[in-house]
Image 1 (cartoon, rainbow over the protein chains, first blue to last red):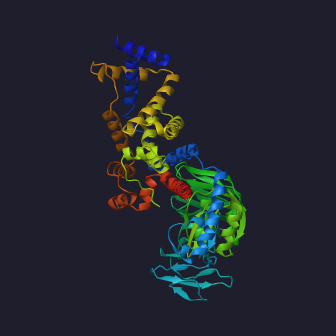
Image 2: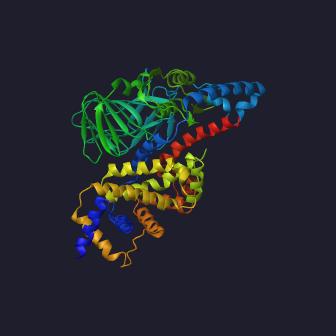
Image 3: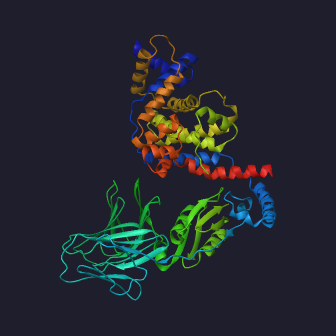
Length: 375
Length: 193
């Protein structure tokens, strides 16, 4: 009987008693088995899986032996000195020179970022806010001025009609700025970020703003008009509160950290999540993960500090790139280990890099606005 | 430094046998997703499928010296995955679905010749099927890369994507490799010193 033919073959296979031809038949079957099934994975999921497997495969690839490196480094240092003596043109060459592997090189220095931003008005006009004086900009029904401590303040006149027009505050790399929105909400924008908000919240059920990059918010309490912040696919609904959102497109996740009050995170397929003070939510393609936050770290930038609490080298360097407006390139194989430190963001770039060298053992070459990271 | 290797599989195998991690990374980029999908369909178990693909690539690296130059790469990788999947099946319970499916194969595929050999064309067909089922953009990038050996830049131009997007599609393996290759060149430099 046909059915028992397959059953018998399967028994043999399980017992390991198949002959070669039978084994081929089983292989042949498995080759086609479920081949028409659709394995439903998105590109993003497949990429995550690829990366996950690679990280394990990579461990099996041979490492260079540390002792050998140390010896080679000494040779390299000696070679570097010789070469430096021989010619000053050495560092002008584009090709990575030998000595780069052992010593940091600072050809110049770069000042930290500062209060720099542009305001994009409803009519599309882009105004630099760096030197804005009191009452410099007017839009119909709105007065924009700057307070003594540097915050841009909106004053909406009482007869201002409801409008759907938006303004956008935009900080470049190396810039930060703070603003008081028409409803009294205070917002701080970190470098390379934008915040879009309506000129007036009048007649609006919800106060909706859009953030890209990183912002810290102190939202004016108004129970009847929820404050909502959109970042990519995430929406944070605010119920009167202090919190930080990091939503840079070159970070893997959107992180929302709640300092006080209450916020609700939505936009993920698993529904919304509400944060308690001291918690953070990481929004990724896989959903939202809530964990205990390091609140000091989350808004350290508002207080002009970098606080690193176990971030890897690449994450640290992305922050450096944004604040010092530099491009970061990697040369060779660095230790990507976790980094712990607090450094003032008011220091010059070379000091930050020196701190990283001491803590992380990596070296840097700074040429113009380009930082090369070396082992 | 570019991690683009516009080589065909056979050239990659030759490079791999000379210990090129970059070639290894390119092979990974070309076949890892397809092998994973192949395994996960058979097993319906994502974690086991990941483990199998991981083992296959590690053994590819460890056994690189013994690979025959002219042996086609894809069948070698597919067969490795298939054998590992078989071992999992051996330890699992037999379901009626397996029996019915196996019976169907016995009845229909060999046409009585008792020759069940999986030939290269069977594996090529399988690869085409897996690629056809990839998410759209990924599939286009894959095809151009694998069949026409285009670089990321050329693919970006052709598909009107940013080079960055193409690179992401070709997976971070290459990015990591680039980092590693930097040190490989570094070593070579010293050996020559």
